[in-house]
Image (tube, rainbow, N blue to C red; front, side):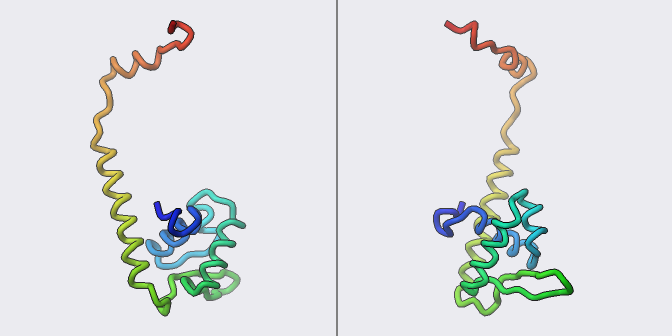
Length: 117
């Protein structure tokens, strides 16, 4: 949803993950999104270099969080909250859609494209 603004769907995912979970580590984020670890690490590095997030080491694990000193944190959090709200609303609307009756579903399952003129 924010890919055009942020330049990367993965970057959007990283920010949404950190927004929702408050913190996370690279492997955890990559597993959640079923994405290559290197791509997640690259986006974490870019976001940290830009000051949007920060990291700290706990043992051998590097935890990332949104940077409370980021000058546009309030606006970023508002934007991420809006995305989460929109996604939830969209899923609720999607779940309200009624499934076709059984007869309709079986009729489409038996469709054979070779029988069409």
